[in-house]
Image (cartoon, rainbow, N blue to C red; front, side, top):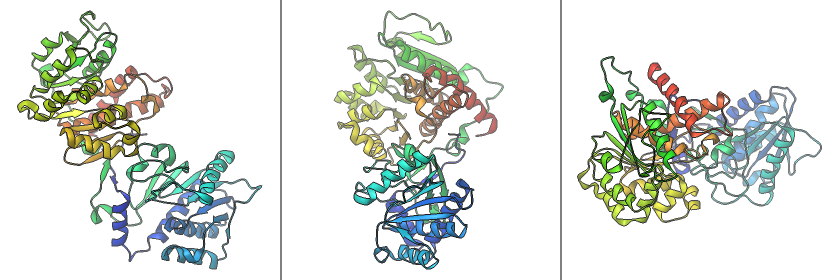
Length: 503
């Protein structure tokens, strides 16, 4: 995905229902169906092409009937499959169904055989679905996916792919795998995290002439550069290494020194004036031959060094020395990032949990950057529960540890102790490889060391991390086989462009 210039407001289903209630005097279904027909026309430019439209038993089905009417008027060969009864539809959907029939349209109870399709539209179920789709509708979901694959045609979902939880990105049984989704009124978080991106395809927004942010407060936002643009500042010519902060990284136990090196290289190339590594492996080499600018210390010496920010965890291990070092790190009054093994130690040790919470007089921010399994350990639950509601898990962690939390994964969630949360949309499957989390830690601690506020540093680093991976893929480096180290120079180039362009 390209770098997002502006963040987008995201709403849960209940909030969208309140917006719809505030706009009952407006023809929202007519606007939604027309917007869907316009996109369908753009996706299928051949006049007279056969289109298969699935209409469900609720208002999503009403949107489908409006779209079908417009597409018939545009001379497409429209085939609408509807297993319900027009008289049992909600009021607006019933009116849309009646007008479609009155204008000469007809509905089918089953999918025509012997026909190849130029476009398929999913208007079965929209937002608010809470249980698996079953019966005939479940068969329609499976058929839509199979026919789109067979005919290699676009599969357009209306508002949200049927079977996807629009709040969380969780799958409710059989789910439409759309190539395109046109979502109405405002964005939904579930489209951008967990299984959402794999089932939504390309997402477009039709606001239906409503200003959602005027009508209701958004649950969350996607991450865009507008959220941290004030900190994308060109450097003064009259600056020196001390102007750009000193970052420390503690980790690198035996056989895991590479994790600390990756984090250190990432911090250095994202602009930290000095980067110190405190390696737990006492037999490690005294220099990084690929990045000799890194300054290696014993962990005790590193903790006595004047630092502007500290990261603990990359390759830290669980040896006897690690918990004591982590407790001492928690006592430093500088921004502190905990990742990887530091999070596992935190989850298993109540005294460390108290050290993080009490802060020992610290006024600086604490940041936790778990992947789902680490988050599950911190919450004393299983990974499935975390992934079922990624935003809920991140918010729970942020409140429990009074820390800024980055829950990594598809659609990383950034959550604050005050209850704000964001969904990142940059990145690709190339990030699913060892070491990319260490690189992210390096990016975050580099920005913290340069004086960025914790939230802006986390937002920018997470978005940059994904954007760097996207640029690598665009350049032919992945997603398969992309390595963590390859992200670092890509991120440096991307970040410098952001600063030069003022975004």
